[in-house]
Image (cartoon, rainbow, N blue to C red; front, side, top):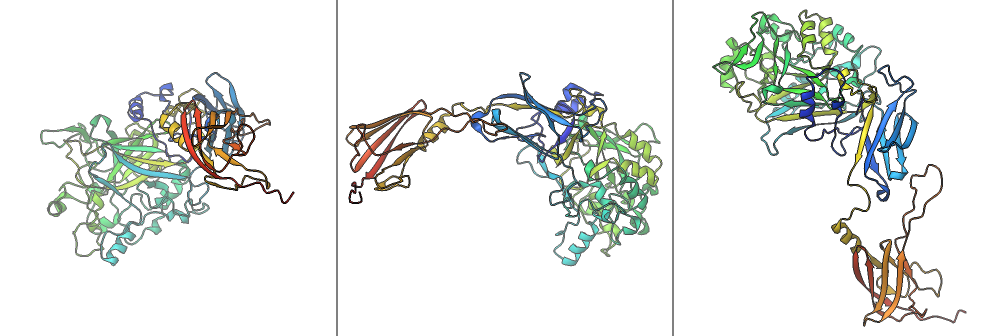
Length: 607
């Protein structure tokens, strides 16, 4: 309903929510319509049932507050949370907000659970990471996109070549050398991901490896130190990145140069000799197409570095649409590489067309010397950059990079949360919308409960502080399910069966006891001999006992599930050995059990 935060849950928007939130991205400021609906078991607060008998269908409201509800900050030291029901009755009042929170709600037979933790905080084997996965809109669709992971190997059967490629792809964990700041990911939790944290690829200039041909983040001490002042793992957001051919959902964005000095030293300058992570010097394009199916150029001949990403990114905690942009290595000049590209089955303009259209080629045979940078094509190095800023067509980033100094590059990178290096197969033409099948990639981490820093991330329903509506539906005890009822009746049994003159329930030499177990609370149990003669009857009507005491997790005790039969008939006489029929009748149905007993003779010699 308001604010942001998530525990260790893979957040999943309810069906239709992503499109609804996308449409809201065109409105400014807090809006109650930004209240987000999540799928069951996919919400930011966990609801766990521990006593199904007491669960009650309905709505509950969880809200945070602190000692100053109007400063757009949730002060963890003074923060408390409360839980009320739909009638306004308070179930939990002003509970202190701690790191780990689980509160039993005994009257509802459930607990409320949330965990206040962010990436980089614990630095353990989880380190705030929840998960990542990609999904195609159509089940069984032909996969068309993959993502290169840091240090990934297996690209060549030649071990030496495979090791070299792994070295080329090793762009993460230079952050360990940052002065005065510990390594935020010592267990390398975030290293082998498809979308990896941008801050983990920051590095000093002298750390640039000999074969570091792929540089999604330029090696620069100035950039690194500046970015780390405001950006770290705790800034990672929970995002959905949608790839679509629907042009109405494309994102206007900057395009940054993916080339670096190694290509220039090899004689392959980028277009306009643009430095790494500066604006591409290519003419800006629109998302419209001309008669040849090519993108229409921007009307301003001086406009460079702007294009369209075929999709959008959205924050699934706040519902805010985010800026997203991509890179392109323009050192692959068509005048030099077009013949090779055509031989490799690639778009001859790939690398200098200002279009997000990565190929599936990590390597090309451009030079017999494997260590030449031009061999490492990387699909055109169309890196994807996901940010934490509200979508504004990358206007702020464009203004920053008009002067591509290290400081201005750092200003942009300080807002970048995730980077990915994609390879694709079977992309469509620009005219046909590029994307062959809609694909959504989801990145999830823990996030502290707090007020959203973006006004559009607030609904205004709780002054921006976290609040949630918990809808419990179809969980209440007592809703009849015939299949479950039949299964429950099938579980009724007699123990032991057969009975060989002894059971573990007997406490002395003269007692004879068996138990009829797993009985309904209300039922009629009648015992007959095999020829149908009446033996004994039990009229069972168990009522749950209320337990006394403050803070009990269970208010009512469970009913006793069995009755004891002392093997006597209605007249108090011990029955003889034989076969007996036990008939159980309840409101849910009936069950007949056959029981066999060998009754021991009373031994009086010991008296």
